[in-house]
Image 1 (cartoon, rainbow, N blue to C red):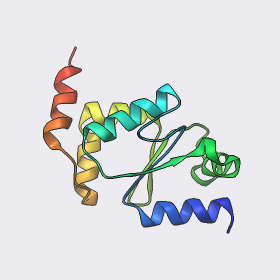
Image 2: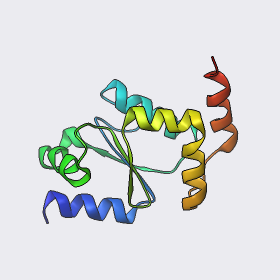
Image 3: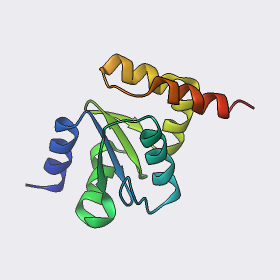
Image 4: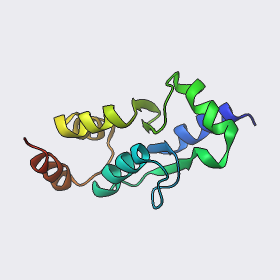
Amino acid sequence: MTALDTIKDTVEKNDVVLFMKGTKMMPQCGFSSRVAGILNYLGLDYADVNVLADAEIRQGIKDFSDWPTIPQLYVKGEFVGGCDIVTEMTLSGELDQLFEAKGVSFDKAAADKIREANQG
């Protein structure tokens, strides 16, 4: 099985997957930490893939998505984006809409709290 096969399999078998540096409990970069923090706060059940543990996966995910940076978030097999995109979508409410449209359960009140806390 190639790295791309493994990635495809992981993305297809899990409703929400975060390819990140480190793990959801121990992120190893600020961007991965921010996205994992959002998902954890929203109470999402998601798979985390530590790209630092496997160089082939680390390169493979960039090829798979045609996106140069990590972290990368997938919802129901669809590439959503990296740290900036996920942060913007969280603040705009688009991430809530995506989860609702895809039937992914999350804590709506927590999402509202994030937006309230970030209103300038």
